Image 1 (cartoon, helix red, strand yellow):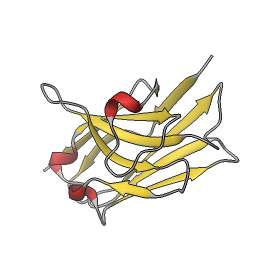
Image 2 (cartoon, rainbow, N blue to C red; image 1 turned 45 degrees about the horizontal axis):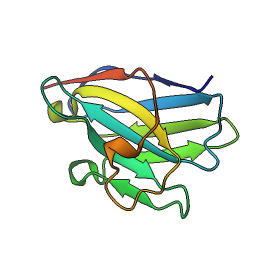
Image 3 (cartoon, rainbow, N blue to C red; image 1 turned 30 degrees about the vertical axis):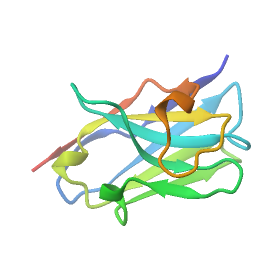
Length: 125
């Protein structure tokens, strides 16, 4: 059974840091595109960062550039999202996801097949 499990969310003050982790079971991250999306109530789920399967190219949403870093550890079958200098507008449920398809630039929600249950990140001002 294919599963993704996120962890690492929590409550942090503005300017603080968190690292989200996502462990896969039932498949490996070796040859898939991996991404982090986030969603707040009443809004669409948006792509935050992505590592493309074919060339390893990395995408970041403009508002997180310079603050967030996505990384992947194939040996641990884990994807990370390191988040620094967090802002209240980063508050959302963060989801880990994987796709069998290449993503050129901003990740497209409909291209992703496997999703975790999400982890809440709350940034207080």
